[in-house]
Length: 127
Image 1 (cartoon, rainbow, N blue to C red):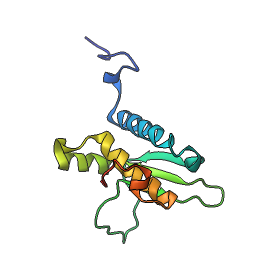
Image 2 (tube, rainbow, N blue to C red):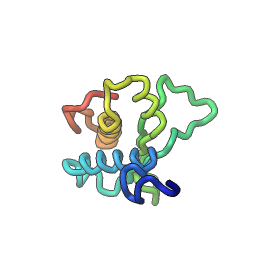
Image 3 (cartoon, rainbow, N blue to C red):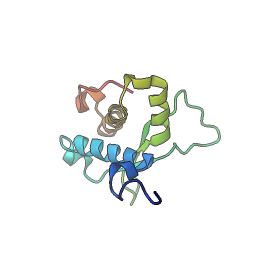
């Protein structure tokens, strides 16, 4: 049968990128509930991979990063889709995508607020 197998908007028609974006949006909504005032004005985004300088050699590729605001630019927290996917493949079924995204965002929110990840959410283990 020609044409799409599912109508637009049905989960079967969503790309991996769109599904990942939806996971991040859901996690951000959960984190904003208890930290609404502190996160006001913070932008959250998704990129495929971190932007790097030629001499950048981290011990581990970040799953998310905090980009402090400057002048007219807002503070941003960016989640990296492909490093998260790679970590999930390496870990197997031991961890869920949403849990890893949540843990990565808790760490960045803690960094932004000058708190420990336990203070942001004591249920989360570091990714």
